[in-house]
Image 1 (tube, rainbow, N blue to C red):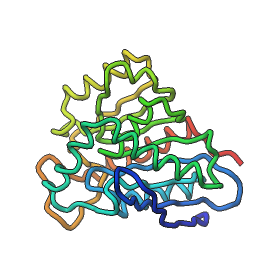
Image 2 (cartoon, rainbow, N blue to C red):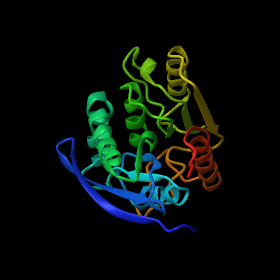
Image 3 (spheres, helix red, strand yellow):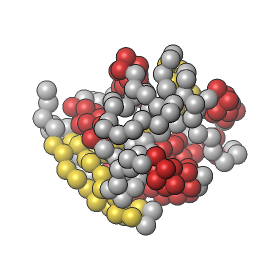
Image 4 (cartoon, rainbow, N blue to C red):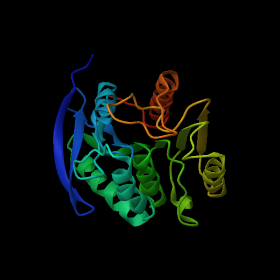
Amino acid sequence: MTTVTTRTVEYPADGLTMIGHLALPAGVGRRPAVLVGPEGTGLNDFQRRRADALAELGYVALAFDIHGGRWFTDPEEMLARCMPLLADPDRMRDIGHAALDVLRAEPRTDPDRIAAVGYGTGGAIALELGRDGVDLRAIGTINALTTGRPGEAARIRCPVWAGVGSEDPIMPPAQRDAFTAEMQDAGVDWRLVVYGGALHAFHHPPVDQATPPGVGYHPRHAQRAWRDVVDLLTECLPVTE
């Protein structure tokens, strides 16, 4: 296993002090970089470990914050924070750009070779960066088939990969159809993988709190989705010495 260096980074966004997790691969040269966005509950050790895993593969990775250091255990509190955010593309873009600025400022980052991967709300932010015309090499989203303002998907300049559970009540077939129609109409290079039998947040291991209806971990599909994300990065953002 390669040696990974990690550190906490604080930066302002959305009127809050965000607390991100930066993971650096071994070596001293510049490397391609990946933004890792958390689901609506906020940044926790799951996404931090994902950033570390990407660093082990040779990427600079920033698991970014969306709630100013908070991780919500109460679904109602989380929804009260996330629903207005998801309804406001400009706020999502501001959060994404603030994280992107931190990642670009890291000396190990190759600023011309960056991808964005996100779960839930973090995936919606990754998509909004694409719709804002950010020069990304790839966008990957799990549980985030959000649509944007009319016409703005045409600004997406990279392949988009999306994964969703077939039984996800938050991203039902009608939402899948709207998302894929938006991508297709905009001429985006897009892929959608539907994981059979999986619920919302199927990627996330159980945590010590009540699980809302429609949410559930699916270990096999969680592993498959992670492999699909790594394959996307290998294709679009290969690590070269």
